[in-house]
Structure formats: C-alpha cells, structure tokens
Image (cartoon, rainbow, N blue to C red):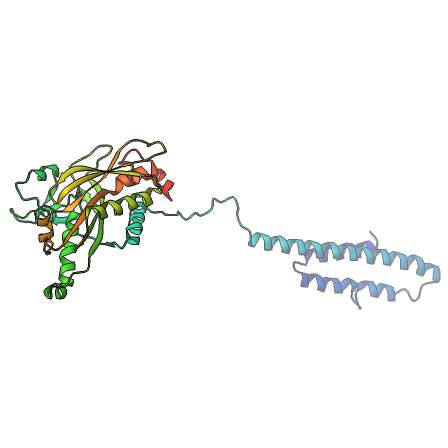
Length: 350
Ligand code: PHE
C-alpha cells in the first residue's frame, strides 16, 4: 500500500471513529484542514519537476477526493443515525390496543323519567320525592285504606322492622304517599293564606320513585318504578285529568293519533276511579288496548288527610309504571332486562 492509499485508509478509520458531528469536524481538520495532511502534501511538491508535479498532483487530488467522499458518507451516516434515534425515542407503538374510556349512559328507565319530568314540567308540575321505607299511615291509612280494608290485600307488601304493631314500617307499595307528604308540606307553607281564608296556590306535582310489591314474573318485579301525579285546586275536574294525561301520553310516545280510554275502576283513594288504557293506531302494537295508569278524582277523605277542606279543594291523581312506559316506548318485552345490569342491553340506550 502506498503512502496516499494509507492516508485515505487512516482518514476513513478516523471518520469511522467519530461518534458525533463535532468529532467528525475535528477529524476532517486533520486531513482536509488548512494545515491538514493533504495541504502538507501539496506544499511538499515544490521541489518536483513539472512532469512529476503532474502525476503527483493528480494522485494527491484523487486521495483528497476519496477522503472527501469518506467524509460525506460518514456525515450522512451520522445524520441518519441521529434521525433514527430521534424517531425511536418519539415512536408511538400503534400495535398496542388503545386505552379506551368506557362511555356511560343513563338507564332506560331514567331516560323515561327525565322525559316524563320534562313533559309534566312543561305543564307546570313540580317533582316531589319521598322515603322508600314508609309508614303504614302514609302508605295506606292516609289514602283512605284503613287497616281492615280489603284493598290492602292487593298490596301484599314487605314490612320492615322499626315501626310499632299498629304503625308498622313497610316498603312503599306506590308513590301515592308522597302526594300526601307533599300536600301537607304545601299546606304548611301557605298556612298564612288559609288562616285568612284566601285560596291556596294549586298543588301540581308528580312523584316518581322506586316502589315494592310481592310480585315477580316477566311483567312484574318486586321492585319497580312509579310516577304519580296530583293536581288539586278549587276547580280542577276530571276533564282536566283527561286533558293532561292525553297530552302527556301523546307527547311521551310522539303520536298525535294516540287514543286514550278511561275505564271505570276502583281505588280506595279516588272516587270516581278509572284505569287508563292507550291504543296505538300504527306500529306493531296497533289496535290493542294497553293499560298504562290508574287515576281518579281524589277522595274527600284523602283531601282531608292532606290538610285541605274537601268542600273547597278538589282534584285528581294518577299513577303509572315507569318500567311499563319504558317497555312500550322502546319495545322491550321482558321487564327483568331492566334489572339484570347486562351491559349489552343497557348500551343500546346510550
Ligand atoms: N297508586 C295506585 C297504584 O299503585 C295508582 C293510582 C294512583 C290510582 C293515583 C289512582 C290514583 O296502583
């Protein structure tokens, strides 16, 4: 190997050793710098003859080009490596499964409740709530259902510890007791008016919530949801009940042609009483009468238990099953689906 080839080799080795661009610039200076090896060789040609200068000059130039080539290659390699390292450091592993945040949603019965509250809200109804463990008095007695009344057997209910023998506590069998609680509160709040004989503001309220009965099959569950309504004033009649409930049902199901039927029935707390049936005019349920609520004009004894004079105040009440309304609206045929907590069912209402 001649002296120039050896120089090219040592330049290549020097460049290869340079681990950073700065190292490489230092190595470059050794060979290609102002006082580097190539410059030195050029200077050393002074004493040569013209012909020798030509050959020698060409050979040195070749070596210089080879060194420059090696320098560029190394520069490129360092730049590539740097880029690669950067890409690696910033890499996203797209093969990892994404981290999902589960999206929640409201239970279909809650959706129904929101809907009912907003429709009745638009008709001026407040929303009242009451305890699920209720006293015998609010659940039955105040609602004109005395201890020996046969209607109590319609609600074969869950009694719980805590009450006394003649006033046991129980899981409420309907949300009607909330009406009495709410009315008593309302009367108390406006006592100043009644003391001076002025008319009290009307009571217009719905009472949604959980209720309990000893019942369990595809359309009955021991725990279910009700929404009751009450409108009491000086001049509230059965025709107002018909108007309110018809408008409510049409709004709820978004069917203007929905037909309602008020079928005579019995409840201890209303007189007269009616079951409310609805009939769709189109769709899979068309033509069938579907029972959706109980209703009636509030019994004078109940009005009295609300702290109001039944000679002056009159009104109506109704009670419906939230679960039933939800089933009808979404076409669900088994009530138990609402309480299984199966996410495959529930996500369909998101
Ligand atoms: N409370 C009754 C029930 O649960 C429904 C109802 C409410 C009926 C109000 C008439 C008036 O069956």
